[in-house]
Image (cartoon, rainbow, N blue to C red; front, side, top):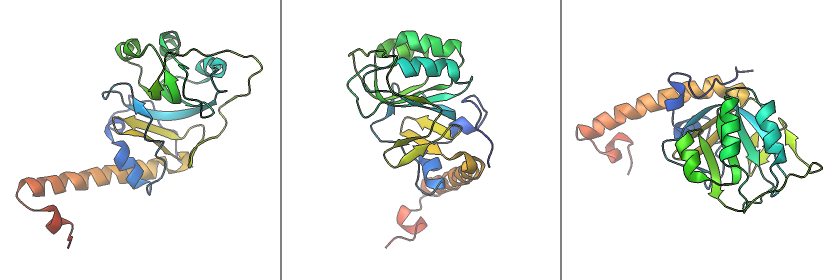
Length: 208
């Protein structure tokens, strides 16, 4: 089994693009394209802490902040209910105090301008001002596997996010995929130099 990813501050790795990782992994792991960073400068690269939240309820997300470890990235499924602001300034401040690595949520957040100012990397499906409940009997989970469309997310998987979106790499394949993504980026840098020097994409890729 591959080693767990480090936090987003790990030198070098955070600069690997999500598209490169997705391609290097065999075109797997891309979360829904609607999930995007609140600002294009946000990037994440670290271990997943999956959270299942009941629709329009954020109690399990509050709990996750205090069960996750420093550097963990909360990856939250909201039962396909998007019209709610599950996360805002208060939870961001709590997550920062706990030194979490960021948030990926298939749902809404609010206080968006303040969240951008605070700087914790947040990726969400939407921004929504509607509030949520906190039902102590609501069904949810912490650290258990989740499924986002055709992507399964397990505790310790690599979560990488940038302006293009979010990709999940299975924990057992992290080292392999990161190495392949680096090689892919190096190869593309060489292609770019050839284009600058006057070659064509048709010639380089031997396209008809």
